[in-house]
Image (tube, rainbow, N blue to C red):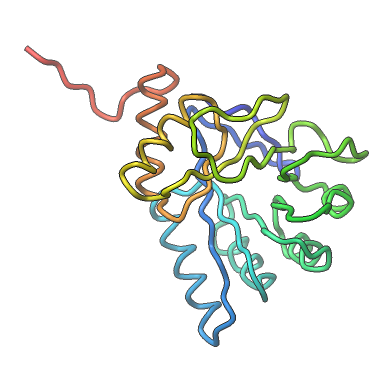
Length: 205
């Protein structure tokens, strides 16, 4: 299915399929930054539309991703307002909020992803996305905003089937750690729906 136009920090993002957000977790480890950077590089090579960084010490990674991949949409996944603000200063396009961070998003003009969306001044509707969490069925929750979700069994055959069904049902952004596979099923779902041409047309005799 075609993704509705989204505007994050003045940058427009749309596609003829569900978008793929690569979730990169930064762990408490001396090599964490290098590991996260490698994961982000792999995600971009595999076709991620967005990359989100979650964990501690993510501000330098946001700045690195912004400089290394200028066309990439970069997100911070946090509940900490100071981390969110620092990442926005480093160039983050959107906040995946684990608490009410609408004030930070309004201050920097970023996109805002949350499980409940406030009616807050300074948050334009085309930059707000509803986080549905982990989907165990293909039907996104009803509402007026685009939906971001991950699927149960991410990366497994059952999870990929559910990702395809979720994309067909209208989920705008699928969060995953298996970017290449999820992008492939999102493209397949869009081709079946007719919003994008098939990757390869085969004529059966």
